[in-house]
Length: 154
Image 1 (cartoon, rainbow, N blue to C red):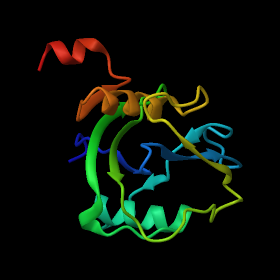
Image 2: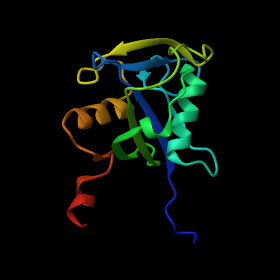
Image 3: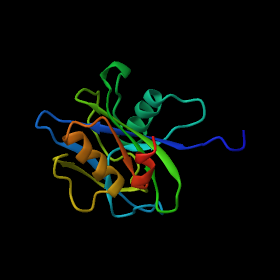
């Protein structure tokens, strides 16, 4: 099975207020995209489903509890980084959660910001901004970072 493709799986949680704005976090001291914005997010842990991972990350990062039935998968992106690492990102939206979001990880997050997902700040992580653009256009799946020729031969 040495040729089997393996990918990191990311989960993103779009907490959406009644005015349509979503919560973004400014990354800090992580070594990746510091100073840039992204929603509460993270990688799956071993044996964890994407739903369980999304619920865990929302609790760990912004202190809210989300019931599994309140998560809706809005988008899946198959991303390839400039370093050629593949990732699969699941973007979940919810309008319902328990608790008031707050910065539970000030050592990794400089601030929280509510923003219009259709017009995210220029400092939004490109991977996230691309997915938000796809969601705004009603697309449930996208490729990001893969050569166009891959699409022509499928």
